[in-house]
Length: 184
View 1 (cartoon, rainbow, N blue to C red):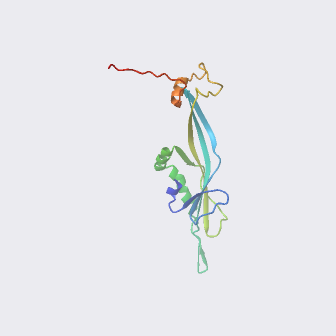
View 2 (cartoon, rainbow, N blue to C red):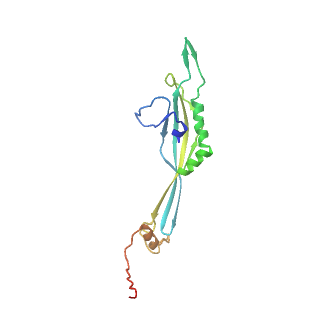
View 3 (tube, one colour):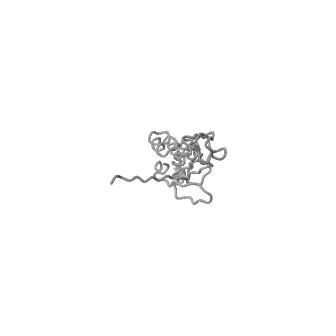
């Protein structure tokens, strides 16, 4: 989504000793995944689990400075890096981004306002903003075959149906074959 938002910038992920591309570029620096909630239920021998997770990350926009030197005069143009990064925060609040995020089953939100990074190299402007991505990780297991609190038994507290779970698992441990003859 950052590539679409900044079509003239190279978008890279931050990692140690990464090579920085030519200006302008956006660096996405992801942090660890946090679990913020979970839900589980057993239905027809299937254990359904949903884990709500969040990945905080920062986006740093690095672009050329608007400062010019000509005939011994220094012209300082207004920095646009912060304003340009503010567009990302507004983009993720838009209906268009909302539709794209629903299709990917994620939510991206700004966590604060963009801030200028001072003391950067001459001729370079930098700004950073914090974001986070929320998503749901869904899993299903065959509860009848592996109950959470011990071995499977017909009177297990989950009331899981071994027959249904076995059918959904795609295997069986016994079979009965019946051959029917049609009248000749």
